[in-house]
Length: 314
Ligand SMILES: Nc1ncnc2c1ncn2[C@@H]1O[C@H](COP(=O)(O)OP(=O)(O)O)[C@@H](O)[C@H]1O
Ligand SMILES: Nc1ccn([C@@H]2O[C@H](COP(=O)(O)OP(=O)(O)O)[C@@H](O)[C@H]2O)c(=O)n1
Image (cartoon, rainbow, N blue to C red; front, top):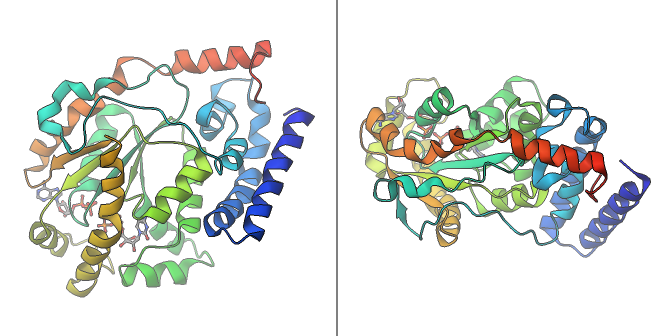
């Protein structure tokens, strides 16, 4: 990074502090995340010109180092559009129209997988990973791993999960970013996230990334309840009391997020009541376009821009 880049980054961080001093809560929590992320991402950004393996996946967010964009994320960001779907698009109906994935971009590509508890998100994610080279990041799994790791946040997370509540975004986004940074691919299925508007805004502000689309598993509560009670994974939250609380949270906090993306034409609604195989058949057309062209071309182009000095971001 050049000294000009450092000066600019400091300026951005200073302006975030000023926002925080004026009690803008989202800016304040984003600022905390950003500071952590600066520490996470900075050492790696020196490898920018030395090849893909040394570049942090998130360094590629919007074509520049993540900490830079994390800071800039507090400003308005333009987004990448995928497909031509209209609101309330049904996966079965649209078929191949889902196609227009920007495979020339070197940005990390993110698909959010949403749906009520027990709607089959994890089950389908495993199939997508096997067939379409995505990395599956389950927010719930990351939180449960954090509890197991003996983290100081462990107790708090455990209590929230037992009570069916949504863990503060600061914690969850940080875990997601760490996992994305460690990943060896740039295609991410982020499952069970964003679960509320706070999750959504924190991720957006910190990464500057917009999802390609939202895969929404639509399933009646009665079916989800039956599946959860039969899941048998020994989870502290798969009991009838917590399940009912989770349903309430889903309706009150998660549906508005799905609706937000629906209005942007990004929600791909899937009937999740069918068999596992049928559901997978329905969603496959959404993922085929990701196989059509490697993102390496876009990536190489970005690296050449940096080498020739034509890119202003360092
Ligand atoms: N299409 C389906 N039909 C019947 N049961 C399913 C289906 N998809 C998943 N399941 C089962 O329902 C339970 C919940 O699925 P899971 O993928 O863990 O849901 P989520 O990740 O949305 O909570 C699991 O026991 C799973 O095996
Ligand atoms: N973005 C997220 C995702 C999960 N969680 C917590 O983790 C629990 C389990 O989420 P999960 O995605 O593993 O499971 P399901 O509820 O989808 O079956 C949620 O009920 C929340 O308590 C969270 O706080 N924030």
